[in-house]
Image 1 (cartoon, helix red, strand yellow):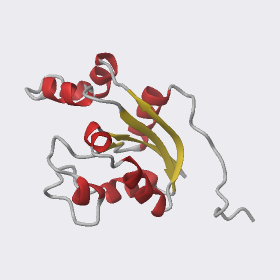
Image 2 (tube, helix red, strand yellow):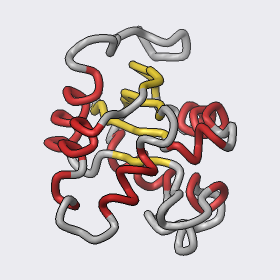
Image 3 (cartoon, one colour):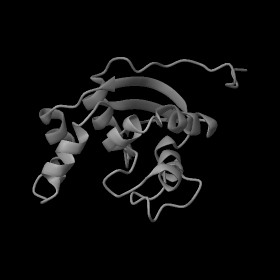
Image 4 (spheres, one colour):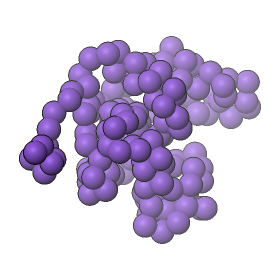
Length: 147
């Protein structure tokens, strides 16, 4: 069982797609272990995107990611990281397959609906960054096989 981080980006919030994206994740069998809306500040943007800080588009990325709140999700399931990335689709929505979240809802590479951790190590760091070790819950769903 893995837990991973998803950020629903400003375009998801602004276009009222939050629950449509979450519904897709749950329909896939993933479990929401944490959910919070938050306004990102410069410090967390700089930390999260430190590998992009020297890129010419970084100021636009920072402006976009602080333009409105985002929704942070802790999501778990068997192979959750690869499952989420498959359900999300290609980073560039124009290359994402129909039926994926980005393929169906994404508009541009800049407004691509969501961020998803790319590895277990990254997920651990990102979950700590956005949830600070709190408000991520373990629970059994009524549909879980508990016998």
